[in-house]
Length: 505
Image (cartoon, rainbow, N blue to C red; front, side):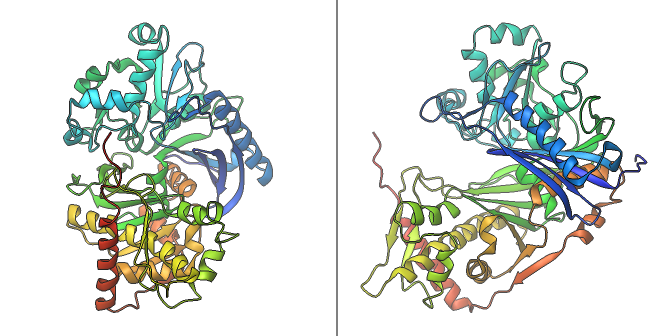
């Protein structure tokens, strides 16, 4: 534990569309923030890239901006935490500090053939070791693509001249000096998204790295999610400030929501939904279409694991209704329309626009509205749109309960859709458990701040974080079990109508 005079904790949140810096006090209240977007680069269909140099420039700018907004100096900051878009992979030259190619973003699908070839027809070839299927989503195949396709990259890699990292590693390396002594570290939450780390040992798996042709010299050292890695570089706003926490964004949100006990889960309602369930210190391998991942590791304490499920289309369905159909003029109108009726009128909307994700994983599915009669009106469709988010969430939660043997006790929620009171009440009703929204909605940055603050004694223990978490509103189930079962049976039936729509070419 480190003594410090700092009154505040800073967090760098390097996201998919923007980078921001937020400064928190001991109560977890936001003191100041600054945010800056970066370009989305689409070289061809299915490819998504970021300019890592631009991102580092933006991180520097928002760090300085937040400090200026709060009128603080580095002496006021006890520690800095980092959270980041996961799976986005970058390779850079150790001596020059320059990327040899743009960062390949988690959404990028160019590695599809690489993933298929590595598996030899078995997508679960590495699942027992890594908790992950072979898919374009993860970092390892992206690194292989760079080494295979950038001139001279493989020779440089084998000569020990290149560094790999997700964006947490890139930010940390630069914040601690870059070419002048920058630290090449990551944490287990990010390492567990590469397809290269052994979930048990928290070390890089030499066999998998060899299969992908990735030299071990490229890989960052895996530290815990909460320890002092080093201090800020001399010329930055966090000069001599301990940099002491790293968590991937979804794990950071889980930590920020104080989901610190087995059975506690959070659901982030955004474009799609991410659900993470804390399963404790025993890893649980999914048999129901979920990912097994590291939830966090605090210093020398045992590793905590999570099950993770992702839903492709939730908030984006409301956007689709607005932008593609013109049925509403503003996203908030969806709740007004939905409240004009008492129920869905028998209508269900299954938004399988690009197939069904967790827990179905059916690429052949396509969106469908079913159960239509002349009775159904605009209000019923609006309600069906909101209910689709809640039904999909229940499917993932049921998969989690089945995998873990740990029944969900309460669902903590964050993200843009949690302002929708009707949706939150229906979510509680269809799950049969309380749904709770916190006071501080910036759970991702807050989670990184907590990890950093724990490392330097700013917060004494995880108990402090639990006590810090403050409830804004709780929705309690009010639906009877017969109605809950009837509605959910209708949803399951609706899902079957979306399957096998796309024929194999």
